[in-house]
Image (cartoon, rainbow, N blue to C red; front, side, top):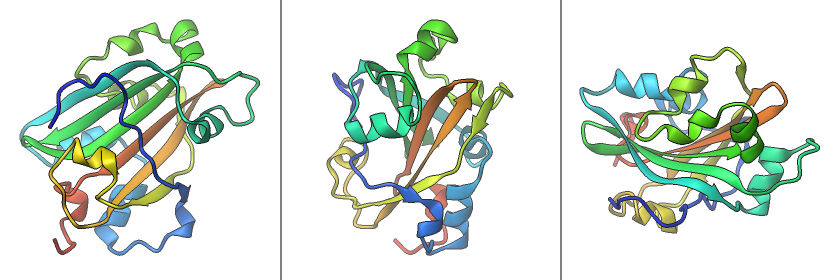
Length: 191
């Protein structure tokens, strides 16, 4: 797996409301639709949990992500704090996470969010009751998509991802998570 990247990888996939999908396995469904802290759940599933930062900085984001993050707000989309990490369990890449944080939120509310380093964003979000998770959207990802190659050797199984907005007063943060082939979310599914 690569070290810190010069630009974010992004997730080039089509997201849909979770009700649009028939999920192939109850365990996978539980991982995808669980509203608790993914970080805490992963930590309890391994002996050694790590966050590997791939990218963290200001970046332009695609129009489709701008629409999702800034929907129905009077904020003009602009540069956004993008944080991409891999959540590792027992030295195996389990989840690729992409967080989008409006610059206005960083400047006006929580500037220390840019100093997370290898600490999980979930520790902030799930320990502050002002963050309210919105409904999930899901996606199926072909493993040959470009960003997967940077994270783990090619695996021929289809991968699943989820994303949701977290409201904090008038602000929104977007968190997307793609479950990589070694993730415990696929434990009941054939390889």
